[in-house]
Image 1 (cartoon, rainbow, N blue to C red):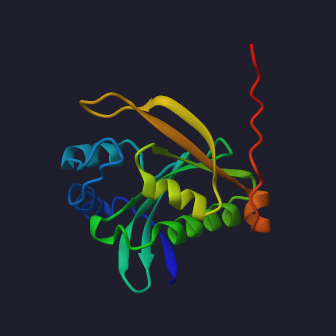
Image 2: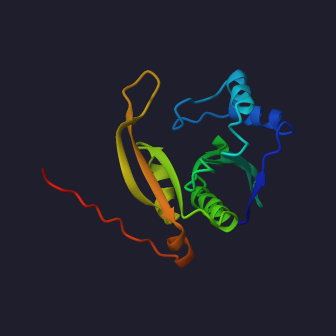
Length: 181
């Protein structure tokens, strides 16, 4: 399977981005299905481009366009990502290959970046497994850290991969240094 990350071209991709975000539910992203106004606000607010953000369409050779990824915090040396697959392409084992392609892009095109990070809700088991399969390790648990509309906040888990682990194909174990009072 070949995965291509195609930079978003705004405003040219505006209508396609609106169709994608209003035509799919994203149950683990806190907002579910977005409205046209919400997407337009995100576009005009620079969510998909600019010095701190970069949006990419995800194309799979055998399937076509399956979703998008946005890299965030590009100016602080440890970018995060937002990954969204169209509903019809979920549960097809695309998560790990897509995350691997995104990781390769980050470390290949950003020599100053030493770590690549992501977060997910505690109940997003598929994404948590995707992180692990892609060589990321869990580094954090934020209790009640993920707001959920109309519900009690959920735990959020933070994962990261280090450049040296990506280069070597290994995973450096996390050493917790818990101390007692």
